[in-house]
Amino acid sequence: MVAKTTIVRFTTACLFVCCFLFSEANLFAQREAVPTDEAIIKTGAGLFEEYACNTCHNVVGKKVGPALAGVYDRRELEWIYSWVKNSTLLIESGDAQAVGLYNEYNKLQMAAYDLSNDQILSIMAYVRNVEENPVVAAVDSAAGSDGAVAQVDGVPAQYLNIMVGVLVFVLVVIMIVLGLIISVLRKIAQDKGDLSDDDEAVINEKFSLSSFLRSPVVIGIITFLVIALAGKNVIDGLYTIGVQQGYAPEQPIAFSHKLHAGQYEIACQYCHTGVEIGKSANIPSVNICMNCHNFLKTDSPEIQKLYAAQESGQPIEWVRIHNLPDLAYFNHSQHVQVGEIECQTCHGEIQEMEVVAQHAPLTMGWCIDCHRNTDINSKGNGYYDKIVELHNKSSKTPLKVADIGGLECAKCHY
Amino acid sequence: MIHKIKAFVPLALVVLISACTAKGDNPGVEYAPQMYHSVPYEPLTQIVDEDRGEWLSNREDGKGEFYNSNPNNPYAQNVRIPVAGTVRRTSNNILPYRLEKDQLAEAALMENPFPASPEVQAEGKRLYTEYCQHCHGSDGKGQGKVGVVYAGVPSYSAPNKKDLPQGHIFHVITHGYNRMWPHASQISEDRRWKIARYVQQLQQQ
Image (tube, rainbow over all chains, first blue to last red):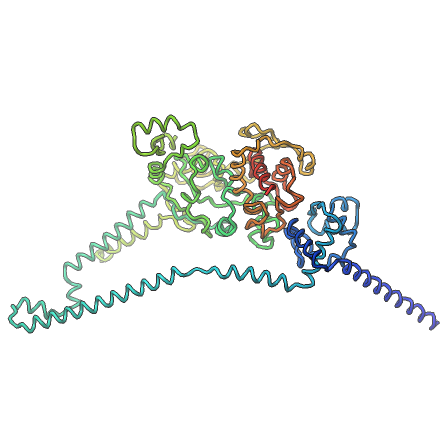
């Protein structure tokens, strides 16, 4: 009885050890099959670069696809070859590993690569080299960041401080010199002795603040200033009626133009798709946000609002900032596409705005002013040839928007 | 006493008037609001509140003067998504593209209706800068500022990409591919073909 259990235990243990040994041996065989030869590693590094493997794979750490380090431990070499050459074929053949990988990585397919087995092996040699000697890569990246840090400006600010300091110093010196001159002159006058009473009064005048403030001249000036300032404020305030310049409402999603248009340099037209082809620049719909945010910053509560909107189909109610009165017609494409006017001309430095505020007053005077001063870009546009010719006969100034009807009432009001 | 109150009149006037100025969430006061607000449906203005502007309303339906939304549409919007299969009137003689997302092989056989002329390529470059550059990079190597963060943006000149035909590029812009999402709603057909011509230039770099 005892002997029987011992035998069973022994055999199980043996099996375990065998399995372990076998798998270990297998692992080593896989890893050891990847060459460590300098020349092969170099070829692999070149291929890694040429085929831009790093767009989807890091050696260490997940990117779009899995980390490449240790792939030779996880998979058979033959399997890796057929995967790289045509992953779609492998998935379609129903290979369990391939299908599992495909599902794990959001059903993204790796492109097919026309590489030979030796080339794929050399890429793995490069990967193994980076994995086993990580210092090399670290030094490289450190060198890169050093270069970035070296670019520090701040010299203009220093110059400014020095200039202000020198100016203050000069002013102080002038004051001291003037004070000295006054005391010297007073002394000379007193020494002379034969002064009239009036002159004596001027020289020995004592300054009294209360009598100075009560003098009718000072009261008059202060009253005038207060009334003028109040009047100016009232008139300025009245002028802002119907002008929404500076309106910066809070939006339903804390979208930052500074981040998107400034830091990431996304062109305005990417989201405001109507600006070149229609009257309105358009407020982007959720699908445009989702072009990036299906993967980026998915945990942010602000981005979660996008997902909610996409799921329900309920549009996000952005608050409209530029409310041009209905009595005036304005067309974006006419100004942006034909007139080639920068967005920033009317909307200000949008790429620096965390919260967008209305930059331009959008008053008629503001429109007209620009129409009077802007030249027509007639280059390469046959439509304008005769108009320019006629205009040049009678005028010496270049053709302006005002000359082709930019001041006509019915151009905008109808 | 009255004397003292009078002294505050200009100050009160200043405070009162400054409330007319737009700032933050306050759009300011409108002059002649009946001329400011659109009577017909405005696509990008939607005022669902029926009482807005009731104080000056002379509308026949008894709603507020500023009410502007279409109750017959989903979410009372003033705009609707066009019916499926709608052909744009301004499609510049480009026929609607009817291939589905998985028909990439068929798409590769499509011919670009625009020639590889310098004008088309220049226009394509302009459009590429607006719609593609932030991910794919100005040189098409996938190193745009967004592309680096987004990851997985390939290089056009990579050995397995540099010979992809025009129809393939057009199809990918239209329907998306792997991590790239469809851009058909943003870029019209003729513009997509022009971008494909410029991408062709970048493939050869």
